[in-house]
Length: 216
Image (cartoon, rainbow, N blue to C red; front, side, top):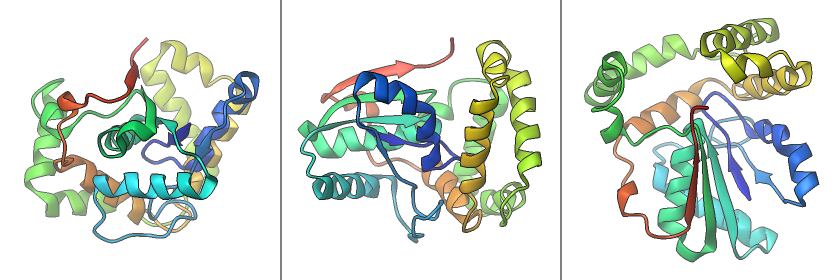
């Protein structure tokens, strides 16, 4: 299974799956997206460029068929693989996946719909705000840990309980710091990439089984 990390995250996110992978005999492969962690930046890349990278990696590993899993913002990349790679993809797992922009702009809370609409219609404004929200430089670990606990409290329930596990907090802190190893540019470019049309219609996917985990 190829695991695609969420936004503001990195390849280290897959460490959360390590115990389960060993228990199930599952081979999990993950890598950073362009400009994140150790991955080279790639100017002007599109969402539909990602499946070719995954296919090349699979070829180098000698893997003919594989499943894909996307966490949060990694979900669109998993769906893109299902769209482009056809029978090579055996199954798709979407974990709290981000929606296609045309869906996000017309459903959900009004504030969120407005935010997606502004991001789509005014890309230069989005770029300025992203520079403020995701500045360059690796964040301080203490700041990352404080933010994690604050977000967990907002979400409540199982998320808040899980954040009390020190080992999990340590993995999340590492992966969130790794995302800015080069700068914040990789994550800023990703938001711009995902608010634009993806280049395919998710409702027309007829390939592999798709599993969705969202909410409870």
